[in-house]
Length: 293
Length: 263
Image (tube, rainbow over all chains, first blue to last red; front, side, top):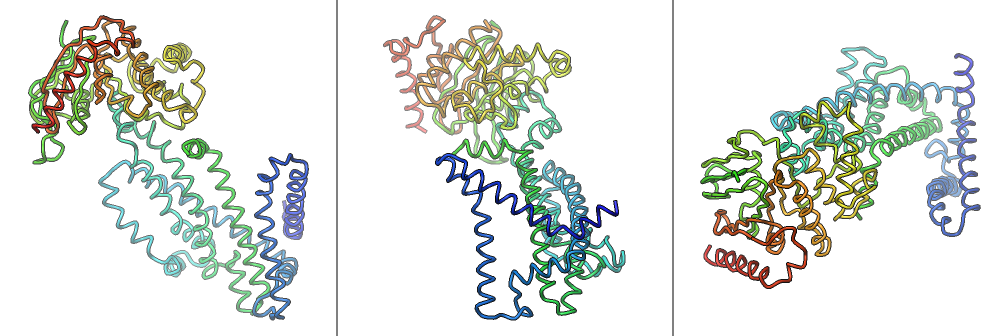
């Protein structure tokens, strides 16, 4: 285990770079091999790559053209060097950020589904809890971190809890909405068959709210991520947030930017994972929206 | 023939103190009969449907279905609406099986006799011209096909009462006439054991399909006329072009127009 960890820590940027280059090569190969008709479609897949690389190129050129100091705005090449130089630290802290985010996100999913089902099934609780939820959601979670530190001390728990608190709201709202907006006709069909409230929920309400739920995961995962980084920044010895806090204390601007890039990569990866999950679980909803147009 | 659905002096309003949706309805539909309720839009036709299936309870008067006063949603009814209301995450066949997952005795038999029920559902699909469409999702079917599937779902658990709320309202004229024949044949096959109440604003549809037609006035809905349609069954679509047919349609139209002008 340790040996694998060691290899991962020292060579992850190289593996990432090889992966990206390999993916580009694969796409290019497919575009070249494709018929003219498919080519436009396939080149759309290349568009994100071109635009991303283009943006970084412009950034690089501007930094070089105006001789911007790395202390103000490092060029992408400087950031790349910093990533390589600090790869062990970035890898180590990214790992901690990732698991703390996922733990908080997992809690938010479990709690969000439970509360969402309750609110969606009962108009009383929906009306009753909604103002409370909106109020809670309006509290900047940065303000809650010190309280968590008083309760649990500096460590992983404040980060997990912050990620949880910041991300459950959209899940609750979406699950509840899916349940509360069953078409009255569908409900009539089932009631006329003698279906119980529970049967209407399990046969129609819950499957119906699934697209809303998976849609909300995309929002929730990015929020959870913000939450854990905020907490790490203030109250942890691990995580990218903590790495950034120390880098900024040292005025190590290239490392700060390297950490930002690591955050962005991690964020995109987590977002893509939820999108993949959404497509897999509720493909019917997306296909039907295409069919309707 | 015994009356199957009987509304006596039924009045209903949705909000306390609000205007009446229906007022003093008297309706008798015999067992096995095909009844149609026609009237201008907003006359409380859908309220009538909800009252007859126990989804709403009248403020005054009595609703008796199959010899029993309605106090809960009646469990012997199948319903179809203008929107097909099929569940998009289920295939057409799975949509058809939905009532079987709820209504006894099918519910407790379903798991062990799955093959038997699937065969039944497929036979039903075939009888409405949807052979082989069971594995498709509803949104892969055309509007008319979805409505056929919706009719099948309303009939799969062999209800004694079929309630149709403008089921063909959203379809084009050709598809609509096709589905008239589908529903005519389904009713004929049940030979007297299936009572149908069709709510519609299409007078030709009502005259072609129904044995008995009730005309409602605009809100608050009252029955202003009741007439029997004596064309022999099975009826061919051609009868809709005979003068006897147009006379009935014309007569009904006159009564509804009169009700609208005096309201």
